[in-house]
Length: 101
Image (cartoon, rainbow, N blue to C red; front, side, top):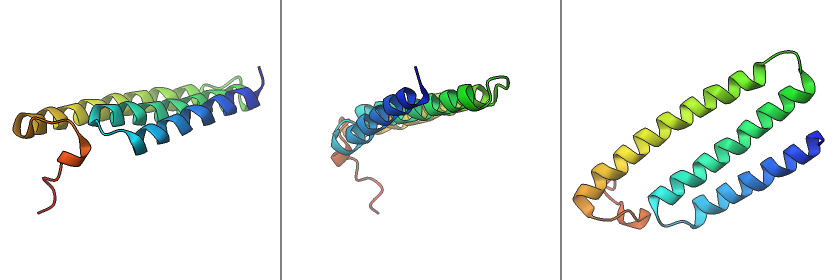
C-alpha cells in the first residue's frame, strides 16, 4: 500500500465525520463523528511518519497524544450531555438552547 491509499482512506473518513457532524441531530452521534475525524488525522500522522521517518516514532507519539485528547473530550462531552439530559430529557442538538442567555 502506498501513501496515497492511506491519504484516500483518511480523506473519506474525514468527509464522513464532517457529514455526520453537519447532519446528525443527536449529540452522541455528533461526538462519534468528531471522533471519526480525529481518527482520520491519526491515520495521516501514522502514514506520514511511516513514509517520511520510518526509524523515528514521532507520528506514533502524536497519535497516542490525540487518542488521549479524544478520550478526555469524550468524557467531558458525555458528562455535559448527561447533565443537560437530566434537566431537558432530550439528547437532540436543537433542544440545547440553554446558553442563549
